[in-house]
Amino acid sequence: MPSAKLSLFVPFEEPEPHLTFAAQLGAECVYTWIPENRTDAESIRSFRCRVEDRGLTLHNAGCIAHGKDAAIHLALANRDERVDAFCDFVTNLGDAGVSVTTFTWEPDQVWSSGIHATRTARARWVDERELLRVRPTHGRRYDREELWDNFAYFIERIIPACRSAGVRLALHPNDPPSDGELGGIPCLIRAVSDYERAFGFAPASVLGMEFCCGCWIEGAAGFGDPVSAISRFVREDRVLIVHFRNVSSPLPEFTETFPDNGYADVRPIVEALVETEYAGTITPDHVPALVEPYGVGASMAYAAGYIRALL
Image (cartoon, rainbow, N blue to C red):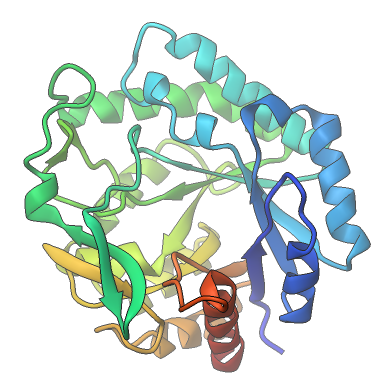
């Protein structure tokens, strides 16, 4: 059997019937987003135990308030306080037995333009040309080197907490990985060279990546061939999570699709994961919404089945 494991999202609050759903689909792992007011070690440990009682593993847990923190990313006045809070979160994750968390260097959001149809299902649509016209969201325009300085500052201060807790950080690329400014803020992780630069700040025991297939094929030339990148970064022990998604076309405009009707051939990506004996998780990501009463749940099952079949 392949080493890679199917993982599905389970909400932190009221995880049933999502745990049952994940188990029924044959998932080995789940992940969750933790509200900032529930990031104490005991709350996380209690959730992990509920997951394990169902025969599943809590592979990673994130907190959006920490993972997309404008104060950290933009060096706002309360940056040190927020870095300390992220360090405390990492410590609590380690105490609770969770070894991976995620973050993205995009202080505003996952940028979107609206909803379009893919095989008549509702799906996220992005028009980069429209997004580049958005006025600055934080009072001014930021220089890309500023963001790299802020990234280095953060990583230097969180390394001791990660090492002590035994927790690894999974860095997600910007979505969309635009070469321009979104809300006055450049995208930090938009190419292979950006991951190479980021990994220069911390060893693989601390810093890895969420390999997002969707962002990779959105960025196209910027990121290059996903298959060779997967092979390289898995062998370097940098891939902690894989997000599995397809899109209709590369930037400047795309609609997210089902895995089998985007412009990219995703099978070689999974073949590379198997051939390199990748042992992390593969997660269906941003699935389109099917017609009710089927909805997102049926679409998630479709994507999960597709992943299992490829594996």
